Image (cartoon, rainbow, N blue to C red; front, side, top):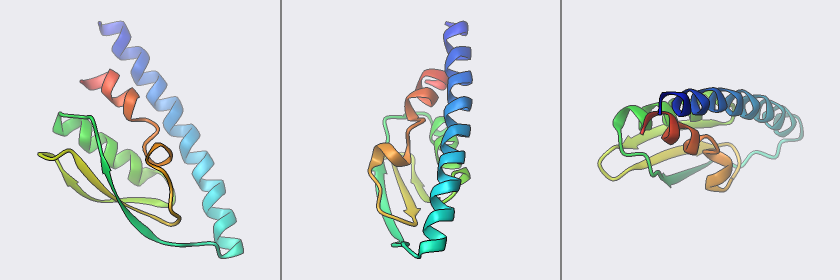
Length: 103
């Protein structure tokens, strides 16, 4: 079980770094050509532990172009502000890794 958690931890770190780099390029391009449509999205999460939810919210905030606004731990819902409308999978691609690592 311990090795599986380490695997998910390493995979989470790699995916997070990749998503940060990808989002940096996206934000730079949108800033130059002016295609910015700010929106707030409510995202349901499968994470039950408050620590896991907090790590997910912080990971979203670390990614350029997104900002975690609110975390409702009881209802397992995150409110996220994005600079352009995106799908849930595009906003939280690292949720399965956090689940495997901490849940």
